[in-house]
Length: 299
Image (tube, rainbow, N blue to C red; front, side, top):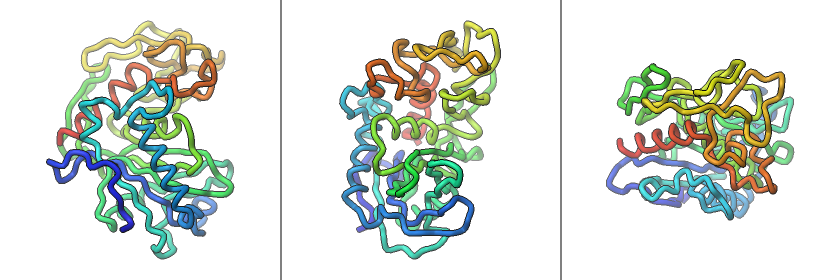
């Protein structure tokens, strides 16, 4: 069978919170070209299975020395279903290409609109989906945020006096393109993007001078308070841990849970001692992502 259950999740519900990990059938090479070639991952199931094991371990806090246990919380882990899909027999064409190769970098790009219908063909509905590639030229992962079903139910929260919602369901799941050789905190970093939302809070990269988002604000001087989340005031990070804010930046971030290490959405490869696994999410990102998972597993 092409679909395999890795973790059963909450068996009392027909649609538990689900992470799907898919072997990408075809690459669009390059992105937006309309040209599709077989992804080498479809002829290398051991490489796919190894990547599945890595993704699961990282999401649940199972890597050596890992401090960020996003889904590893004992109240959450049993509720999360994880499925893998390895189906090399699907026909070539636009609809079966989940990953594109960027034409100007080594970035793998998720073709987000194809994920939901592809998974539906395999009887799967996901909240977050990874597409694994064995591209011979592109190795850098990337992700798109979730498109929430804002007409459906959710758990409301407030951010700086405005009301948003951790929606229970999506129109388009959070999508990730990842190389089978990915290591360390890559899978968890990209999950942080994908679990977040276009309309209810986007988790951005902190290693660049980003636009406004759930975890990034802009302006100088940096204020003492970063945000008020559900009535709780969270402080700013005035120095960006050991990395420092470049003098040209306007971005500033939320306080760190572990001030000695970069935030997980920042450049975790620059962690002291060369141990990215010691990095954790900053305070608002951690609370937001955990609340989103709790809302979704409650549906």
